[in-house]
Image 1 (cartoon, rainbow, N blue to C red):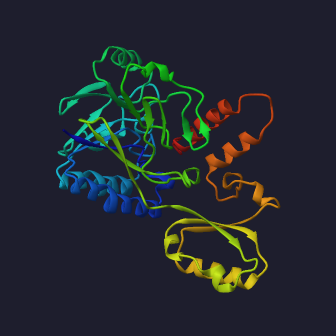
Image 2 (cartoon, rainbow, N blue to C red):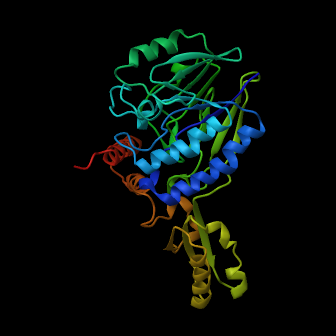
Image 3 (cartoon, rainbow, N blue to C red):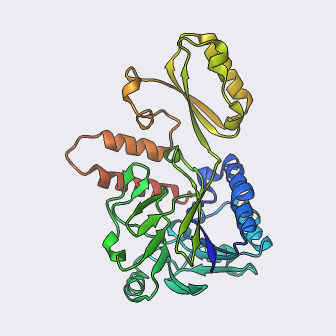
Length: 357
């Protein structure tokens, strides 16, 4: 019996190489991921793609953090790393030939295997097909392997129609999920929210990256090759928080009785439902400021707050992609909002990956 740690879409260098983001994810690796591997004697890690954020380049500081805080920690505990390259890991869109993983790790002495084409491996008697990002160059080989492999478990970086890219944002394009009906289990990276439909499961990111991830469970998984069971290991650390403020019929002590410490080094939205005591509000904001959050924004509630969900409340601090999705969803033009959301997402990601001359 073997237990494999599955992690995906780590996006080292996200949030524009933010040091605060790096410190946030380091807590996950130091206090959740590696302790679990050590305590349970897990010596195999499979990364399902999108290891880094940018397709075209990487910040040297981020490259060092990735090496020291992830790769070398795996070597320290004697764990072997298998990496399936994702779309964020490849330089060109039509081939996996030039990719960040081979450039960063390919010539190293670390115990790492990198997969740019479909590869079938055996883990303690269980055959698993590892499938990287499918593009024009490897499409035929990838589809041939999917149609002929004897493996009943597939792990890849797929874009499958009908699954959510982010919570509440479905993807209308990509592969037909029926293409995977012959397999017992299909695990995939690429989409950032966890979801499951029949035999296909998207694993999601291990931590929050944007406001789109707010209040959406994050973590990593352990796959048991004997029982074929998948265990979710949650990440308790949150990068984004919302605080609802309402001082009606409350004392100052009741208004300010908040666990402020959990907001240190995080993004916070204060949503004002009712504010009748400006002094109490200022006192609460002062206490919040003293724990050093990364950023605090204040949202004035709508008149009919009781009729709105959190997802309906938006302000300038939401990430660009969330704002675009909210705007598209509000349009009434008789077309397919889902397709337009997908187009806007693709354009946004292309813009992020453009080289600045």
